[in-house]
Image 1: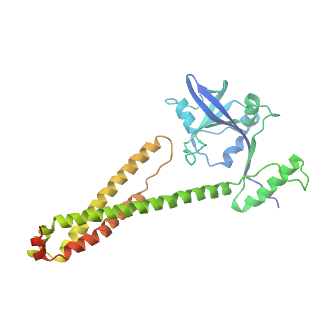
Image 2 (image 1 turned 180 degrees about the vertical axis):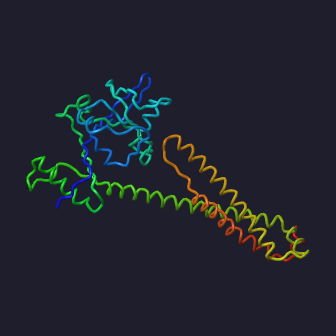
Image 3 (image 1 turned 120 degrees about the vertical axis):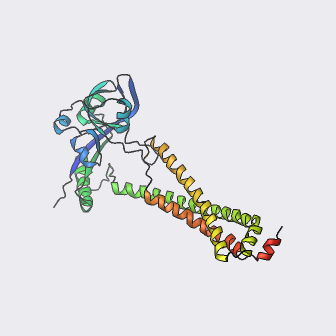
Length: 315
């Protein structure tokens, strides 16, 4: 039995300029599609709705605007019901999409796009005969049905193209899973590089704190001798210097955390998604403390093992 997809949406994009009164946004991805496109994506609406089947088939002059375009064209105005001009053609805004953020710091910004009915796209911006660049988005019912829907789509496309059984496909099919695998591989490489840099930074930092504590022990040799002479135990001296090392490292960790949060807030101003999670903050503080304790062990043992007589004679 053939697997029926949930939704099928032909799409065609063009890079156009969009204006409203004296405001202008250059290089907007204007996509012509049908009413089912919203079913093939995970787009969330900030306001309004997607266009209906009647609006789609009738080629009505309605538009659904991405978050960044809406912010630039309607800084202090509710965009729903307002008129925008796409390369001089008037369109009524019926919905706006929540901001999603740029993809991998790269080429495509999903917030910089507008959706209009495909019929309106053909009518105003390209002919059917010379349209070209049509992509058909298909969504399967579930992950188990993907392969069956894919095979059915290939068969339909081959019949439409009039291809014989021994002729290769003259079209391509891209699966979201394959794109996600590619993204995950890139993210994996970034994570490995990040872990390496983090580990190297911790190692260098630990060596630095250890050297600082050794210098501190050397400068306070007489103080240590006096404390031991009046009855201070080894574990007291040991605890003191380990605590100092942990405190120094904790202060450094908190400063780094503050810079990270501040940097995240700055990056968010450019519509790049950043999140600071509580468990990550706790982990960062914990690693700072552990690094301080480990780096302070050797100097602390050196101080604890000092002979009070030799320490008092130290010049």
